[in-house]
View (cartoon, rainbow, N blue to C red):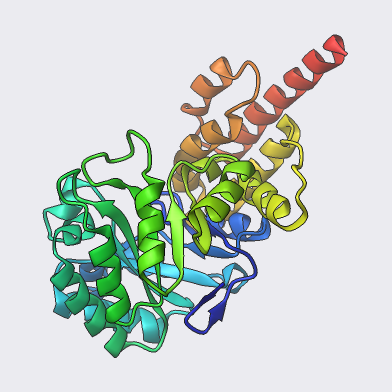
Length: 329
């Protein structure tokens, strides 16, 4: 799959998830085979006012590439200016515009999913951005605002007419937030009505589901979000299944905790130990998902304040699991 002049080695894409897709996690996703990784969204105003936190979010490790940096905003002037900044001052490969975030504080600013109600605004904003930058411009959107306002095909056609290089479509409406099920029939309609690449997103939790969505709905790529939290193996296993037709086994507890600690160490490099360990609590809980007898260790994770404390807790748990398995076998 090509997005503008950028070639992806496979159609498996890590979704841009707020509060999650920082360079530490993205690099792991890339090492686990993801064809494209997407950064979490950054405010156009944050970039323009040179907010320290916003500018730090634009950092891209060369090893992550190809990478898509996502921006959001509600006004043409500030969105275009932010896109120009990303174009000139970062080593991202693709500039993505967020048209899917359902959170009220974003939609109240006429940003994110609010655009879904106005195909004319989509055309105007995307066209102005495309004209202002060299990098390919893509859009991540939802199928619509609510059941009565599903303009997915019109909105996608507006993106294409404006010069957008690809579209990622999440099969839920804004009103659904992250509840209910994703409507892949509408994603298929989008694919049938535009000629630029369409990446489907929503409810992909196994390699088999990823393959089925690619084949049944004709999309060019699959975007994996929540299924990759604490589970970059989902990305690796999906790539292997698509390329070789084999389903690799799930990782064991030790393998999971080794990657969990690699993730933490990279976060510490980025943010310092205190902030990184606090942030890592939710990730560590995700890495534990699917493993046996995690109740007490999950509770204790939330008390952790140091790297060594987190490591000791997780590997003590691993030893308990391994002892239990030896007894059973």
